[in-house]
Amino acid sequence: MRFVDTFLFAEPHEADVLWVKLNVEDHLFHEWVVVENSYTLQGEYKGHCINDLILGDERFAKFIPKLHVIESDIKPDFPVGGRRVLDSETRRIESAQREAATPYLLATYADEDYVLISDVDECLDMEAAKRRRLLRSKAAKGEDIILVPRVRYMFDYDNRRLGRGCVPLVSIRQLKRDGSPDHYRRALGHPSVIWKHEMVFEYSYCYSRDSILRKYGTTGHVGFEQADLEAALRNNHRHVSEYRVSKYGSRPLEWTFETWFVKRRLNSRNSPAFVREHLAELKTDVVSPDYKRNRMETYPQFFPKSRVRRARRWIVLYGKTYSDLIVQNSHYIKYKSRGSHLLLAGHKLVTALRRPGRWARVTRYLQRRRGRKNTARV
Image (cartoon, rainbow, N blue to C red):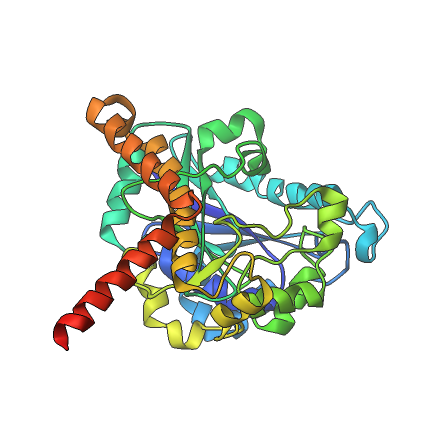
């Protein structure tokens, strides 16, 4: 049983995330099949650059024997330029790029082999032996489609997005049935999946400001502008475009765990060892160091100045983040009587925190308690 990873490459600003990906996955993967198109997803001609990049950068020298590059020339069939491009049109180019790898994969690998259908900024951590054992045990069951859990970092390598997703690991046997790698990323969506260990780490938009703006003009998601980026970096939240909200019905800025990012101290549970060892040279430092204070000034409805009120909102937010996933992935909570009692207790706790006036009573109690202690000291 062999493992291979296939992904798309766009431009030189992705060199660092590619370097991370290759080092983190090298311990298990037999090969990487990289597809680069001469046109961006929004239809702009750019040429090919990955071969020059990996040959000219000594960081990639040891990986060249395991890198198979496919250069495609898929031209846009739509008017190119700004907001005239639609998301549906960029998806067609992306789908065609992914399918360019299919003939090579089917001709080179056996039915029992597996292909990870990923992006360049998604790396399956195979440095850790515990994660390698877990992945092999999942693949040994013979399932044709395995959804590998993914966590995401945005704008910087230690800036965590609380939401979860997954990346499809598909057998060659399954790929022979329809021949469409992109189908598994689109049709399956990105449901939240939890295993014993975090597996895939995505470093989305972990570039300099100029490179992020360049990505806005080439990525498959059309309509983001510099003002959207500045607001996102100042307040450390997902980039929101008013144009996309009105055009595509994208979600506006709201109080959901997918919207607000948090700085994390990296450890063996939430990051690959390679990222921790090279964090100083990888960090982008594009997020404002004062983002917590900026949030209270810009979004007082979400981040009140009262520490108690902020704590209440965050407790509810984290409760929503993890409670559904725990129930979804825990056989014990689903089917055991004690589990239902725990679930009911958790529900009562979150409901109590949401009741108006509850925190005010707690605050008054603490104030009275402190007053009694001060009186006793006197």
